Image 1: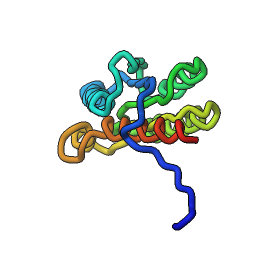
Image 2 (image 1 turned 120 degrees about the vertical axis):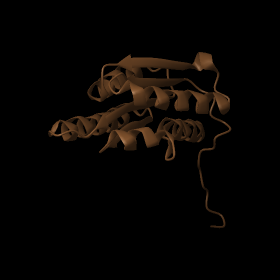
Image 3 (image 1 turned 30 degrees about the vertical axis):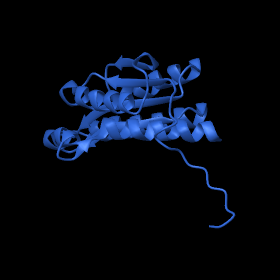
Image 4 (image 1 turned 90 degrees about the horizontal axis):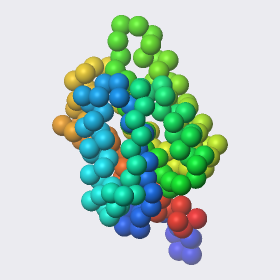
Length: 156
């Protein structure tokens, strides 16, 4: 690795403006993801005034809201938070898949990093585990990724 230039983000140079797009559906889980994301950003030095929370009805609406936010050009990263819990119909596949594809499409079209903090789980228990109990808080993890990407983009 000698003489190879390596560029990577850190968690210490991530001051910037962050938007968190939050789905209200399954709010009993998603609100814990939001708390984890905000706590992580603030603990890493992001000023609360540099965090904007935007609420949408559900995971399906996350991509279009993220696109509108990214197009305005006044954020450095977006964190998309939601929870899609499998039921007895094919609805899960459509919502989860389109939310993922939509968010990826917005990120690629705009160049604004968008973290996918949408739980796609089989059971309510799995959702609870991933929103702050034994499997950690995926909202906080998405926020860490946002911090790293903002730091990385400052170097690129």
